[in-house]
Image 1 (cartoon, rainbow, N blue to C red):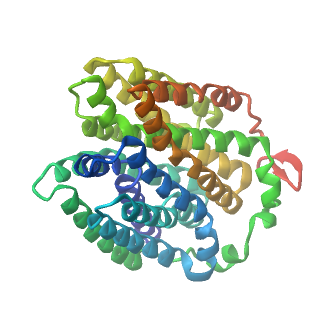
Image 2: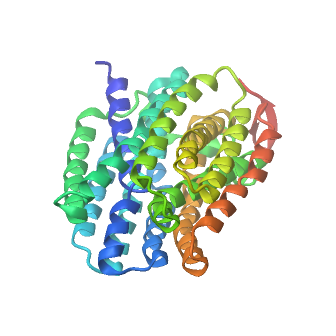
Length: 399
C-alpha cells in the first residue's frame, strides 16, 4: 500500500477515536458517574470545560511539535495521553480528579485531532488535499456515530463506567503503536518544517484580524458550542422532558449522518462555492436545535438527527476547506489550530447549559439560545469574500 494511504489510515483512526471518546460520548459515562456520586448537572458539565480549556491551550502545540519531533510522534504521544486520561477517569471518585482526567483528554485531543491530521494529509496528498481532507474528516466523524452507542452499551454493561474507561484506555495504547508503525513525515518535511505563516504572506496578526478568519472562526466555534452541549446534555434533557428515546442512539445516528455528509460535501466543495454550503449548514444547525429544544415527541427527536448531523459536519469541512483555500496549506493549518484554541470557549457550553437547567428546570432555553446565535454567523458566511487570497495585506486572485 502506498505510504500516503497508510498515513491517512492512521490519522483518520486517531481522529475517529479521539473525537468519539472525548467530546462526542464523554457525557454518557459522566452522566452515570454524576448519578452515582450525586454531582449536580452544572458541576458535571464543567468537566467538558476542563477538556476544552486544555484543548484550547495546547491547540497550537502540533505546529510547535511537528517541526521538532515530526507528525508521527506528535500523534502517537497524543494517543498515549488519551490512555493516561482514561486510566485516571477509571479511578475517579470525586470531581477534582475527574476534572484533571478531563484536562488530560483536552491536551491529548489537541495533539491527535484536526490540526495534526490536516497538516499530514495536506502535505502528503498535494493537489488532492481538499478531497483527501474530506475523506479524513468523513471517516473521522464516524467516531461520533460509533462511540456513543458503544459507550452506552459498555457503561450499561457489567463493567459500568469504570470498565468503559479501562477498555478504551487499552484501545488508545494500540492506536499509539499503529501511529508509530504507519505514519511517516511528508517527502517535503524539511521544507515544511522551515515554513511558517509569514512565509506564505501571513503573519498571525494579519489573519487574526481578517474578516474571513473571524467568520470561519465564529462558524466553527459556534458549531462546537452546540455540538458539545448536545453530546453532554441530550441524555438528561430527554430524561427531564420524559421522552422515551435513547439519547445515546440519537448521538450515534447524527454522527453517522454527519460522517456521510462530510464525504459528500468534500465532493461538493470542488463543484460549488463552499461559503454557500457553510451558510446552509449553519441554518440547518439552528433549525435542529430548535426542534430538540421544543420538540417532545420521538418524531421531533429523529427529525433532529439528519438536520444536525448534516449541519455540524458540513460546517466543519466547508470551513476547513475555506481556511486552506484562503490561507494556504501551512498557514491554513496554523489558522485551524488557532480556531481550535478559540474553540476552548465552546466547552463552557455544558456548564452554562447545566446551570440554566438547574435554575429553570430544563435545558430548553439553553438549547434554543445557542441554536439561534448561529443565525448571524450564517448571514456573515453568505456574504463573505472568498474570491482571493490575502498576501501581505493585499487581496490577490487565487492560484
